[in-house]
Length: 339
Image 1 (cartoon, rainbow, N blue to C red):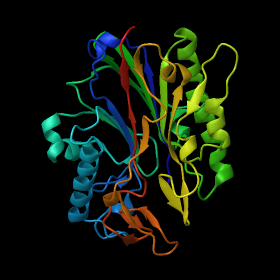
Image 2: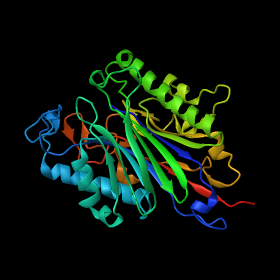
Image 3: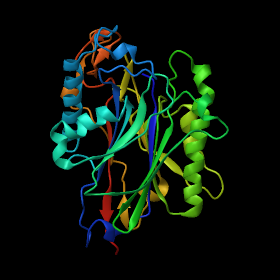
Image 4: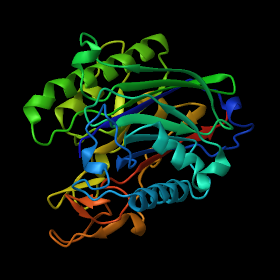
């Protein structure tokens, strides 16, 4: 589980952009850690040897096709047969695997467009996005790394920025995939802190410019809601926006998106600005808008620790044939008419 990904959406959207007289156009957002979506070709610029035919994990064309088909089914089912408007993804090897997903499966009828660029990650895993151009229009896109670090010295995942137009309005989205805390908490901690501070700075800057900016921060944080990096995102200073973690009520017990040594962790989270919850009109998200998507087909028996766990593609080097070692998270945006 390497992995963190965050997507940040900023909404400054009047109700007329999505419908009239309180009507609601379905706008579901999804984030999914795909657990190593690799093809079977050797990339000489990255260390993808684990996922090559003849490699230690026995990766093959049939396994790759099975995984792609499983991801398609998950996206379709998560949208309740109207697939999400925006799907942010991490642990994706290259643009080619995204093309196979959106063009070589039943998603092709929805004509998803792709946002992708190769990151400096040593294994070649990237952050990316697919979106439905019939519902949103891409305005701008960039990739970022934390300030003060030269590109050649940065070996993690770069940060994806996008902005979309919906009607006359704009959504700004930032997707991150932070370093893993496993196998070296101290080594990765400083970089995770730097990325969290950058995301917080971007959110605060948007709130300074637009005090009522409607913001969503989500993804695989590789941290639980109470961890220090998440506290960076939710801290509040004078003149800056308050960020509320909708995932906080889902931590502990038998709920979470990732299971580590028998314990569920709430690694994939959604945080929102207070203005998105306390919106007088237009788009808003209530506390029930966030959801861990955990249907039975994404779960498997946890034979070692009891209960259930995500139906992963691999357990170490043992092939399970499942979908991912993470569960997806969803957020629905609702519409309130002007009174």
